[in-house]
Length: 419
Picture 1 (cartoon, rainbow, N blue to C red):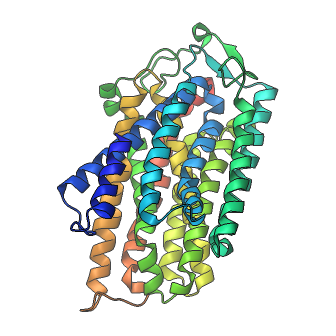
Picture 2 (cartoon, rainbow, N blue to C red; picture 1 turned 90 degrees about the vertical axis):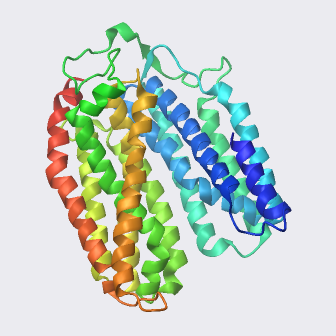
Picture 3 (cartoon, one colour; picture 1 turned 30 degrees about the vertical axis):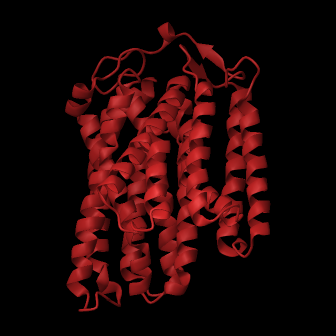
């Protein structure tokens, strides 16, 4: 599906000269299938690892996976920067390489019958993998700022990233095809069984219908809708925001800072939410999601009033961190609340939150506010261009953090305390 979609786009835009760069119905079909293939891979990788890790280690596992997901675009940019082919052939090679990687590595995505429990060895593996991913993020950040001056620099960066990533894989590769040799395992029969609809950790799992009627899932979906919509507001309009502030010289820097802080948010919340220091104080994953909403609200408020590029970039860092945190928290909380029996269905439903959030906050709210202040040439200068949209979004984030957050924490408190 993924290969077919990429090839359709390649032949339409780069082989068919009469087509030019004008999309038609076949183009939209191709992008439709690209989105689906990406979703399938995401569900398979995320679902498998959530199944293999016990609740207290799910955050760290999701942090690592979602962190690399956030870095993927930067890694592809480095590959393109090596100059291995023209822009047209690069898309063709990317289609083949992407499909080959998926087909060759999918056999190593193993579902174990029993959940994995942390040992000292496995914890060291996760911590080492975290440090390696941070190094990769910093390397890509430096490349995005000063490293795009030649093919040689891109090749050096790509080789360095490959070596670092290979060292991470070597931590988990073992001869008998299991990825978790350092883990001791707990039989499924010994997992804790709970009673109410908000605590289906173990063999009991919520069906899609039960998840839709569960108060904890409804509140969680609303919180995710707000924070992801707020984050996609920034992602989709960051160039326009900088232009309205007359800070276009700092746009590329802000994009790089947002990307790196996004990765750090995914990593930090994943690992921090698993620490006994916080869980012993009843600060579980829903509390960190509420904190991310507070940070996102603060970021939008800062964007609304900032008058210097440094304040704007600081707001971008905070917003990127909060946005990344939401992506790590999402699958882990779904697994905690609903169990793994119907995870694919429930996770797919939760995937609608960023779609609807982007539609409301970015496509509707931001567009209406900007167009109301834009001139005939569709240009606008000043904080008023997006000001009202930022303030409304900030208010929604505060509502999610201080109204919906306590409800979700209350609904899931017994789940996390017992588990």
